[in-house]
Image (tube, rainbow, N blue to C red; front, side, top):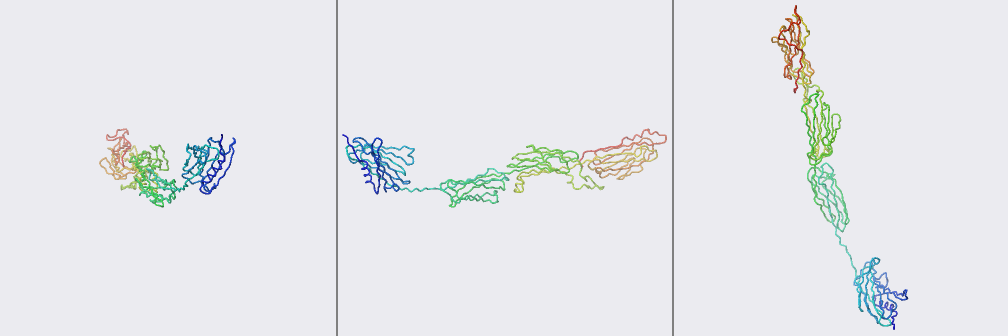
Length: 581
């Protein structure tokens, strides 16, 4: 015998409607499956009965009829219709009516957002005829499906009643935020005093809230100033959003050498403050030295070579270093060299030489050389009047000056005096112009053959062929036996001592000057004779001698007869000695 239950679904809908706490509506529909079985669906919107204003949708789905003793399932779907309200402690209670036995329940959870991608989690309960399925928390849009397994024990109409309950929970969410402030300062560890100096400041808000009115300040130490000459840096950053970072640069100028440090401070409108670590910069500078080596005297027509060395004695590099040598304009350049460090040839402009050395690191040096010649003595040098007074003017006129100046980038006029002094160096080479006299002595007779009883004249000439004057020039003429002194003429007076005729000393003889004396004697005997002249001066270390032979003609005497024993042969003498004059 077979037993059937009939019209189960409408009865279930009535039960659901009866358990709703408030106005409810439900929709009922019957469907027939492909195998001819019918089923009914009931949708309930709670608590208002309208989908647009309700919190929960409850959908019941049950078969239209089943055989007695054959297990069947009821499906109950619960969905949170809200967008932002979580329903707490959601429960589905069921109890049988009539001859229906509840065999078990199965819960399946499915979220609204991941229904397409995730499988639900299932909880099963078996053998509980009167039980409550606890769904718990049902988040916005979340759906739970309850499957109830039952068996009809007798023919007729019977069913199961379901009740739903929940606790609406309203949560107020407050986000607690914290603003924060950080500032850093980046500076070079070492900087050249004449090079641009730049500090970089970074201010950031690592917090979770915005900060307003951020201002960064930095009290620079004495010795460092901003481009406008002030020592206080103030930069208005403005507002910083959470997580935002900003950077800015400041151009700094160093006014002195040394180690300098300071820290940056960032503040907001509400007195939020941050400090950077103390950063330090060492300001360095080049210190150029120059020296010139060469002879202390300069002779005419004798090349002189000079060597100039430039060295950086400072703790910073000498940038764009150059060397200028100004030659004495009275000299002539003979030769130049390249720099020893990087083989740079000089540029020449008239009497100026310029080497572009470039960069000299601390402790580095480079050297150059040049050679000059003095082709003529400056005009007026050695001129003296007959009183012996020097007429050549200032002694500096007889000193050659070669000036060497080394300079680097920091020698510019806009740099502090201390910096400019270190960035440039000058050295001077002085050489005294030395001249040498060269006296030419000549003795000649006006007639080589003189009759006995007549006068013979001897002319003594002294010429200074050198570049320097000579002093205390003395002439002594020695007449041989057979000649008798008659007269003497010249720039100085003559004194006779037997056969010797001594002239007073001429105080000075200038370069190119010529002195002349004339001695007249009477020929008393015939034959060949020789007259001698001696020359002494301050410059000469030995006496210069000149001898002139003369033939005295007598009656019955051969011109070839021997001259007296005290005669000498000779004509002229030129003697010179290198000596400072």
